[in-house]
Image (cartoon, rainbow, N blue to C red; front, side, top):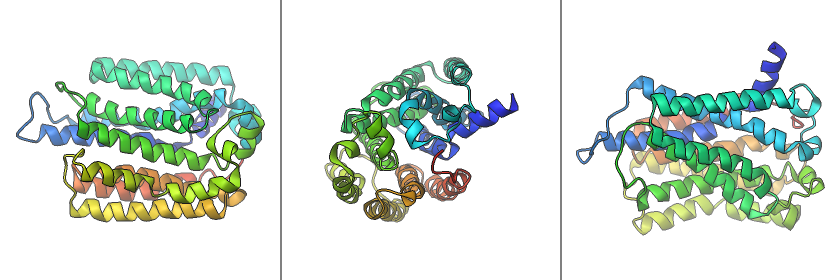
Length: 326
């Protein structure tokens, strides 16, 4: 049993937990911002216990759903990551899926009973998109779009689970933030495809990199690093985002922009080889710190804290997974 739990936790790849956790925290921070404003209707500042419960669901959602990805992606993982527990036999697939099913049902029941039933919609949609993603990644950019949309459901979940609210649930401003979350995560997963090139190609997964080839993709990696900042400027300058930037946002946005450019440079320079795997930590930091930066539009102190904590712990947890084949 201990060996099973150890293998299960290893398969969760907890350094990724900040992806779903911070994405969801954006929604919860925005809900609290509305609840504290004089224009709130039914919104109530959530109790600490409720916020903690929402965050537990969000941070664990990545790892729980990752088991499904590992099961569906066994074919390519035999080449890309032969040391992963489910590939090398350390983690029994059926038992792992059973535990995942129990945990998913438990999280849905928790949402329905203790949080807000309406949050079940993004939660279930996120689970379905996670399953669809494994098949969508075989069709070029569609995989990146599905992945980005999947993570954006965490933002919607964080907002809806935090407390009662009235329609309209989606405005131009809120959808703009969801778009930014989707773009940052779609770009993040694009970079991860470099390390999976050989296995994806062998398994017939037509990712962007498999379709274009590594040499052309490395140029796309450098250029696409500008994408999140460019889309934010377009949305902001056209007043689709109602919240105004502040000094903290500009500082964190500048640091995030550097991380994005650095990530693009790393994959341009080392699109294959061992360095490709270790460039993942810069990739994760750029995405997660970018999500933390968005929180500065609503809560500057929280954004700064999450930016620093995410940067530090993503690196720390990634260093616990130093095997490129796992």
